[in-house]
Length: 113
Image (cartoon, rainbow, N blue to C red):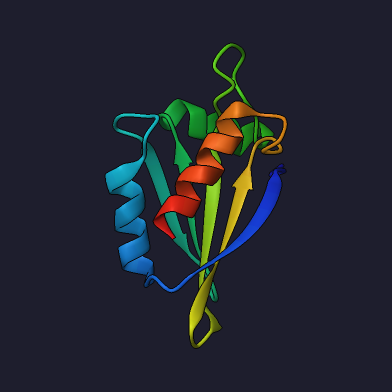
């Protein structure tokens, strides 16, 4: 069961540049766990603190941990959206106006667009 809150953003960055920026600048976890899955039109980039966090998301969907409020998230990159821009769908465990962590992820993604 995968459930989360979707936010749509756009970028002129190419997919490989965008993914590298993600990996180079992630501000809240060291040695994050990434799972990258290429579909027909999109590339799904799952990000978690570690493999255990990813496995829990795979089992029960998006969630946040007690205390820190952190949780796994997904970035879907669609490079075939339009000739002049790419669509980025950010899927967060909670709404950005209700979760400090979700807001932090949203602001970080906006900063690398």
